[in-house]
Each structure stands twice: as structure tokens, then as C-alpha cells.
Length: 135
Image (cartoon, one colour):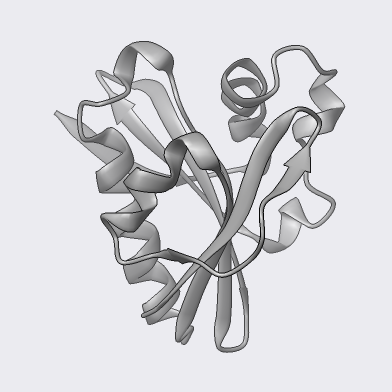
């Protein structure tokens, strides 16, 4: 059974680091305004298996640092987290949601009605595009 709960920014760092940028220093996965965000963790058997961070600025919301343990991917955990974040963004008054998405995850985001709204850009060697949707 998976349950989602609010967590602190610090609780996201280890998973962000190990999944997203394991070749960088831990500091690399910290976001300057982490203290302003809403952070959520997905737990299975009291073990943190996925994280996501939501930042709301008026009608616009953005999620960042979405990471699931590799052995827990493709099991619906990310879907639960992203649905939770979309509902939270709406509850907090946002009317749009966006993210900078790795292109290898583009199909996942499209399943949620998100579409690319930018040209491809790179963070290091990894291609990204901005994806967005109306809530």
C-alpha cells in the first residue's frame, strides 16, 4: 500500500540525489527556494520511495525534483504523486502547472495532459523541454 504525505525539503535530498543527479554533489539537488515549496513523499511500508516538490506562485505552479527509486518505477507511484500534486496545486489556487521535463519522460507527462511548450534545452548532457497544462 502506498501513502503520500507532506515531508520536509531535507527529506527529499537523498532520493533526489541518488535518482536524478548521482554524479553531482548533494548540494546540486537543493533548490534555492526549497523552503517556499510543498514537498511530498510516497511511502511503502514506511519507506520513502518517491518524492516531488511543488512551488505555487499565484495562478502558476511548478513541480520540480520528481524522483522515484528505480526499483519502484513503472508501478504507479509516480502517477499517484503527480495526481496528488495536481490536486494540491488546484487547492492552492493555481490554474496552470508546469515542469522542466527530461525528454525520456515526455510520454509520462503527456498522459497527464501536459504538452511541450519550449524548444529542447540541456542541463549538462540531458535534453529537457518545458511541459505545461491547464488545471
